[in-house]
Image (cartoon, rainbow, N blue to C red; front, side):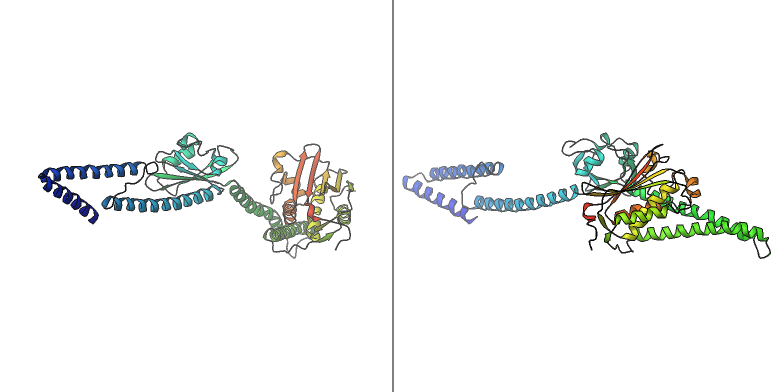
Length: 429
């Protein structure tokens, strides 16, 4: 500010002194003031053009107020640039983090138009950004339940479940959250697996109750009927039935405990070299002693002498369940093949039966606890409905998988496929 005063005072002093010499002092003062005003105006004009286009124009060079204003503006611009870089960095990190979420996230404007969407939104909702930028979400997701959620989104706790527009087998949980003043955030979560687990839990409780009800009813009925003075013939008739039903409950509880240990990992996995050809030979011999064995043609085919690193007790349990099931649920004299092979370094144990086969709609749920294709037939065979669930969890603990292929009238194939790193040479310790 002082520079402006001294500059004006200097100009007026020089003009007044010159006018005093020539005898026109007021004229010189007026002209000097006018020139100074035009010069000052040009600097303010240069300042305005610099503010409008700072990259194309240079800042005005003038000591005083204009120079102070320019320095303050440059400082503010530097601060804003630094703040902008930080905000841009935060935004990029937010977008990167949100893009990695398995949930679909869509940022909506006041009228429900897409402002941004992550990668999962494309996979689950078919909403792609920036392709759908500005398009209303209700034009992209047309499910009536979801449309209703957009209308009541003022309720932050409102949640609806609807199928994905990309795949109706995927169930999504939708929620809309309002933030700022009028913007909204749409979150869609895949709950297909959660619903499946909830259904399995409900089925498990219902099935356990149902499975235990029958033997308990039989035992209770006989206990209410019999006493110390009952006819010995009635006792001889009741005891085998009571023993059978108690044995059924014992096997069921035993399998449930075994399955619980497998699921929770309470039982340590003891890997050691396992002679698979010998193990399969022992299990096949045991199968021929089953009460359900009725001259079945069990053929053991050993195509490799390799061993596996495995927990021998768990593996014996899994393979026994597969072979015993093949004996229990196939007609008399049915052909059953047990194959041990290593193809392209992929070790596989296959149990193939030529029985009635299983409908395709049952295959996906066969390894669920207590799931039965034919409940009456399974109970007659004495099964607990937990065998294949045990097989699945044993194989999971060995990083192996169970595949099931079946054709009605042609039979079923159960394959236990192990990873290559489980193979060992015979006799390795």
